[in-house]
Image 1 (spheres, rainbow, N blue to C red):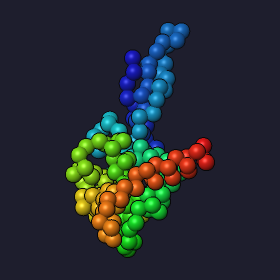
Image 2 (image 1 turned 135 degrees about the horizontal axis):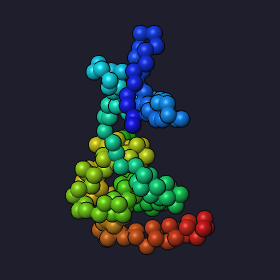
Image 3 (image 1 turned 30 degrees about the vertical axis):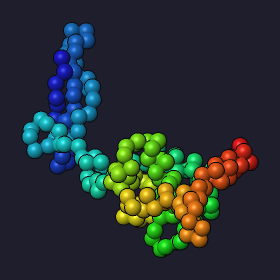
Length: 179
């Protein structure tokens, strides 16, 4: 039968689980396991404090699947290809059409909801950090503006210019060259 024994060493009391047994008709005691330093309640060990108990999380973001897909898109040069083929003006702190459309594609893979939810979804991921674009730059209007750059009206001729074929050809050419 086991019991808790108190052992004083200096000014501290240590608790151990011990067991009594018989050997050749005599009662003997053997050590089973160490339970810890005695706490405020006699016979009970102190509450163990772990490092994780002291950490105060400030937030979390979706990282694994999003990081993998972002790395794959970077490997295939998807954002750079879109930016090269679709005309746009660079603005400080603004996301390019390539970044926005890549983020949108990643959203469709991991969290396919309405495009109106993109603005709320993007800051909950690691995509702002990975792309180097502040979370507030990912607005609904920015996503729609990027989509307009793929297929828009030429101001000089007033004709519709569709760049999807050029994008597909360039992305396929790059994929064939690297794989």
